Amino acid sequence: MRCEHTPTTAPGSAQTVPGLTQTVPGPASTVPGTAETLPDPVDTAPGRAGAAPHPAPSVPDPAQTARADASPRPAGTTPRPATAVPRPARTVPAPPRADASAGVTAVAHPNIALVKYWGKRDEGLILPWTDSLSMTLDVFPTTTRVRLDAAAGHDEVTLDGQPATGEAARRVTAFLELVRERAGSTRRAVVDSRNTVPTGAGLASSASGFAALAVAAAAAYGLELDATGLSRLARRGSGSASRSVFGGFAVWHAGPSGATGAAADAGSYAEPVPAAGLDPALVVAVLDAGPKTVSSREAMRRTVDTSPLYRPWADSSRADLADMRAALERGDLEAVGEIAERNALGMHATMLAARPAVRYLSPATVTVLDRVLQLRREGIAAHATMDAGPNVKVLCRRTDARRVAAALAETVPSARVLVAGPGPAARLLDETDGAAR
Image (cartoon, rainbow, N blue to C red; front, side, top):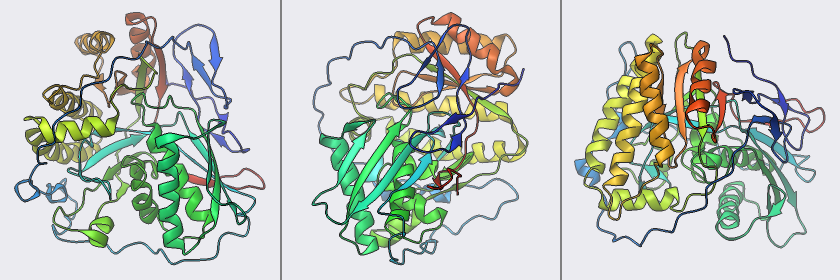
């Protein structure tokens, strides 16, 4: 049976965006701040004690690590020169939009990496060690409104109806400073962002959040950016946000490892990847929606600095990317799933080998992984992937999605299980009639 998606209204606008699918019987609940309906929410487990500080030995030597963009491309495609740096998208300062004082609103969706991004070679520019490839989802949109205020002495940031504080506020303000620098503006902004994805739970809330902020802020400050330029800009807020600028499947290029400054920034961006005749679904088992005790940033640093498995995984990830692009090109969803599962398990192995270890996989995670393996033995092409958290995402054919969802709900009754499909690109919302631009 084909999974149905119920349209919902994005917060703060009249725009209709794709919604969530109920996948298990039972009463539904409504997430605050959105009209989306979710299946049976679960109580979150209490947080675990934080991990001890880690040593900081040197990161992998770029000269000894093959460049991600030098990976072989699928047959029939034209390889990019290994040293090529793409022409930067236009960032010509322009006057703020006429309606910027009234507000500019954008919506973006999270993405799930099927070939993972894990570890940065440049923390300031947010440049990864390897390329990655993801699928943008049609669930959990983030809607962000940016309004310029000439009289304000500082940025005002509201997240889910509450004033942002601490690191969350700092990251948004730092991002806005970057936009202002490029736009030649000093005007402060009032930012209102509404998330429907559980923040900090390994479900890519930063990807949708910074993709939406990039689109809205660029428009408000009058930056003239194409999609590639928006991807580069979103990357500066959160690496995975570079991919959420695009719908469907997208690859994020790490860029030339020897480049620095403007050349390095220009060389790292995402772009769409065609997928021939695929009709995939991603069944998401939310096992713990609480914040992580070890942030993704901290876990990445610790893994790159201390894990003896990191460099071998990075090398194998480049091969996984080439295999993944070839599988997408020929429309082989089962191969896509096999590659995604081995890449994710390898990434978590690098974390377990870090010193001290980073362990996101919970007993419930392992139980779900075992059930996915059993589904394959029953003849269903289902493959698991996990990000920096305990939650499991299962890639399968859309026609098998309800059966997979029911199996996961039965296996872990406390889990919230939902079904996602490929989602749309980030976009502006028309402030007058709610239509997406």
